[in-house]
Length: 386
Image 1 (cartoon, rainbow, N blue to C red):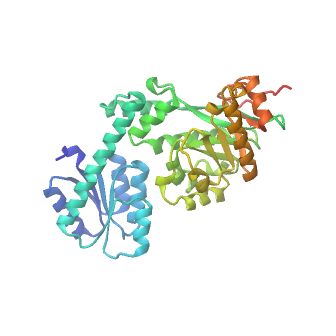
Image 2 (cartoon, rainbow, N blue to C red):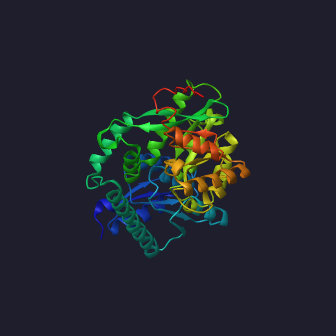
Image 3 (cartoon, one colour):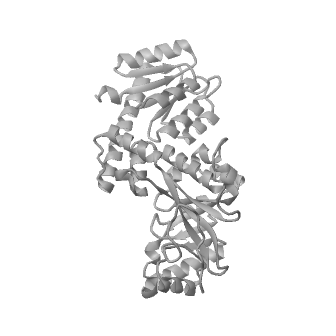
């Protein structure tokens, strides 16, 4: 049996009798149950504590169980959510599974069936936590044994968070076309973006970090010259986040000049049908880019799901290209295919005149790299010399 702190259940049902009876079944089996009568109370509970499982009715007044599911997913992408309903329909079942419900149970739920589902969900939640710790050990030797220490450090990092801006230039037009926003923090072990995002993912605070970054970009956007694009790195999960397309989104007011960069280093396949979310983002005016092209997942998933306006060629393909015939062949082919598809290519990591000249000879126009400017806290446009 798992330790008690790993057996906390948030139970949500607006039927008082069902709420009491279900809580009693779970408590008699050793679960610590927080029982609340509606969705709003569930959201407050999710903000106040961490749970291993959420069990929620679907049909409730005000916030529905689907709303509770979304709220739980925003706060912890790994938490299993079990949905219960006395009035099942195919539409609600599909919607629940679309938003990542772990199980879908029909009322009245037998005690044995409920306990089996909650026990299995608890074990899966613990497995997800252990997997995050294993990943952190492999990637950066983070001190995973002390989550309280990491949480405090991440909170300090969020308070010190700031952005720097790296220009993207067009050689043909001899002008700056936009800036990539890059996150920085002064917090000890989280000075690099990689460490910052690893810790946020480990602690289930990825969404919190992303939203903080979006708020800072929205603040800075007003001081960057009109007509210039702002390239914003987003994790694939962020495409589903209301902070991009929901009411009160800090970036939505600037959507017409924002390009969302989705890395090819993370697969999109596990997100399900993201088409409606991508359409909603485009309807607001956002454009999309595939980042790290050539170093991430092979295949067509990112292009199929996103239909990107831009692709960003990773610096691994750019570095030393002037003396590497195979890189020249591959990059030249990418330029040609993207041109035929109506996709603009940005080549990252250009550091020398030789790399720039080799890229231009292959058909490059949009470039980014230290040759033109280093990232700076103010979005300064470099002077392009002949």
